[in-house]
Length: 314
Image 1 (cartoon, rainbow, N blue to C red):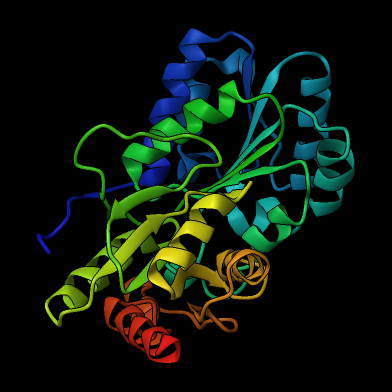
Image 2: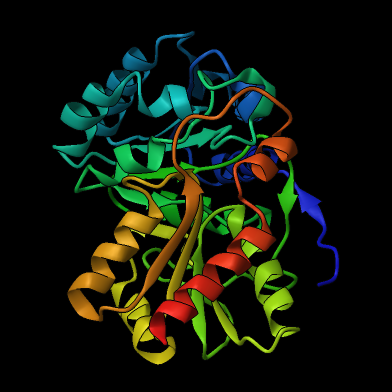
């Protein structure tokens, strides 16, 4: 596979938010002391009257966002994944999810690729937390170009949305225009022997694994499941019926993440072998690339999981 260009999803988010702020005066941005890191400060520099830094007070940020939404504004809350979902979960649940308020939560520094900050800053439970809220749309874009479209779609959508982004630059898998739709999976590669369903930065890993398998005579479909909630269940069912084996790949704890959601769908609609590549516990401190290698979030590990799934099918 040709080496992919790299781009920062969090910086792309900051630029997209700035442009959308110019178009819509109802957008307000709330941050929790990490605005330079999330690039929300770009919006703040341009629109200081619509920008609020709450400091390290995530609970207050979510409550304030609920107030803005109740008054007809479109609040966008930004911080790191581990702080934006874990600390204020009760406020998100009772003040945003239950009344279905129009709040957008965009969290960066997800997964273990945040690296040297260590396990206390690794966001590996955020997807499980946010998909546990029935009214939330949950999105994890595969790359920077899809991030732009996801942010636009989130701000058009009426209701609470969570978007998950990363600290390091990640591979760009979309060379041309992005066809993004909330709740719809994207078929990036066709195949007949198995399907790899990936989300976020692991989509590039899935594509690399599929190309390596093709050289061994294994035909692998690859789905970019950028929306985890609502999950594109018809697409998952079709993949299960047409290829007979599923592998999920995510930079997240397996329990409650993409693998759990896909496995539940497959069990109900089209039972086939399912293998999961993801985290089985907390990671240690280290460079992001080293951690991804150590904990098995690699093309080689995905390819091995595909072979196991195919063997179980036979």
